[in-house]
Length: 220
Image 1 (cartoon, one colour):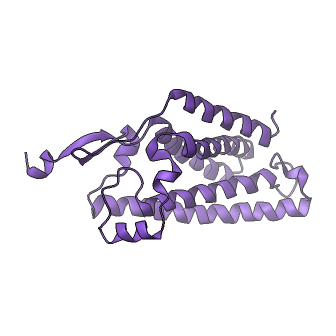
Image 2 (cartoon, helix red, strand yellow):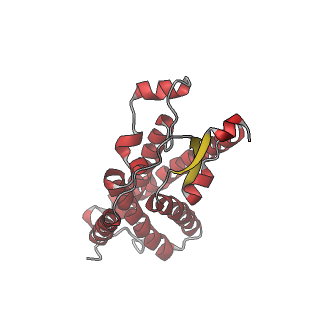
Image 3 (tube, helix red, strand yellow):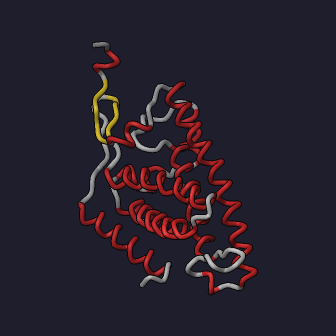
């Protein structure tokens, strides 16, 4: 065993709720794209509600969840980003300063996309967001156009996200996908993993997500 191997240990870095959110979102976005392309609007609207619930959950989990999931622990200022780029930053187990802001941008785009969808309507008014009646038909159509535009921006951003993952894997020899699947990764010996929280917090975040989704989609 080399000195490099001997100086490293396997630790937990991502909690299960964060990993479930990530992969459920990946699947849901794929379904959203497919259902929009093939005009399966019943599926599109239903999946949109599911994505809304996921986003509300992640926003709450970013405040009360495990340490590596919390926004306060990975949204850093410009100095931290520059320190990371220069290689002077300490080892980061979760999102690095650049990755953290990438996550924030992705969540902002997704929230914008879902928010527009809540008020959008198709040309015939047959398929409309649950809050579309709060705006005029012309406004709902403009919002539908913006909904489509933001999704194209989101696709470009996701392509950049995948490119970054491939760069880290090929150039920096840092596998980012594996830890998001099983939750663990190699780290310098003695490094602390994430700090877990009580399952009650998960139940709170899930309950808030369910209630918010039911209210915003007028199911409650």
